[in-house]
Length: 253
Image (tube, rainbow, N blue to C red; front, side, top):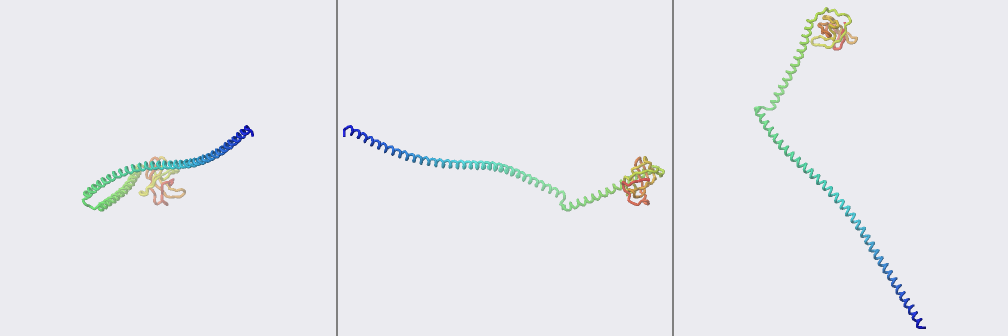
């Protein structure tokens, strides 16, 4: 074998060794890179897990903080309401204290008045005074009732005086022309006379007699005792009466 061939073989062998070494190094490097990549990937997953846990913890803390803020706001509002209630209660207490003082003053004043009244009564029993007052009131009511009766009697007497005065003042023949119709306006049962809504302008004359009807029913007769322009006063004739003459009954001749 020539020296050149040997050199070539040596170079080839050296190249093969270098290639093998380089291949070995490349494979080792790839393995290192893969291992390092797995390590990095594992660390990244751990960091992601830690990040998610941190985010979860952060949300929980934010929620807790929001709840605390709501509780703080509610507590602040409640404290303000309690402060207002306290101020109102203090004012009410002050007003009540003032009212109590006024009530005590009124009680003292009332007691002083009671003492004056007792002194004025001369020691007389209030029940006796009340009974005397009730008796006086009953007597007053009786006097007032008697006064009303006397007033009614006076009015009736005045009406009779007026009737008699008109009777004396008016003069008539007692003969009524036919066709006179009218109505009874009022009835005075005490003095047994009526007031008619027709008078001397309607040809009604003193001593004239009119028949009283209610619808188609004969009631009685009245005799004219005095007249004015459109009214007349007439006595009820008991002997001719067959019913109770009332206001609104018709009269005719």
